[in-house]
Image (tube, rainbow, N blue to C red; front, side, top):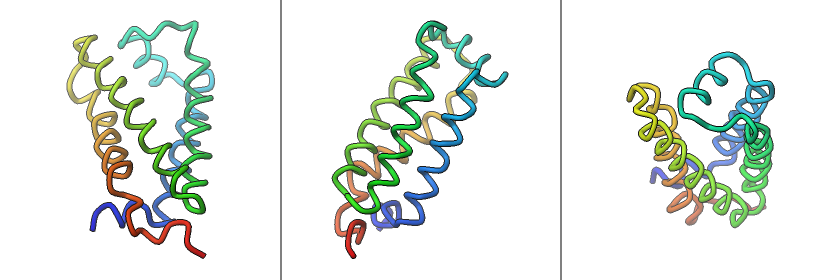
Length: 125
């Protein structure tokens, strides 16, 4: 049941909007994002990749409303992304509370990738 709720077009649109907003705050990036990136030791020379990846994920999630295979692929790739993010927090010995958002998104996208598009109605006219 949870998976079908996640692939609901309204939920996918909301997740896409969240990723788009996250992409926007990574341009620059804004203070808290910059502090987090520095804390986990992500080299500044690759920070430009974050808004690109997050924008692409927003497009993929929105596209998943019409094309479930695209949505599932995007959810899988976001699972990989957030696995790396959680790993970066752990490797940096960051406070666990700082890893909670990434861990929550990891669980969400792993569920969506694994079961979210099964008989969801996503992609049906």
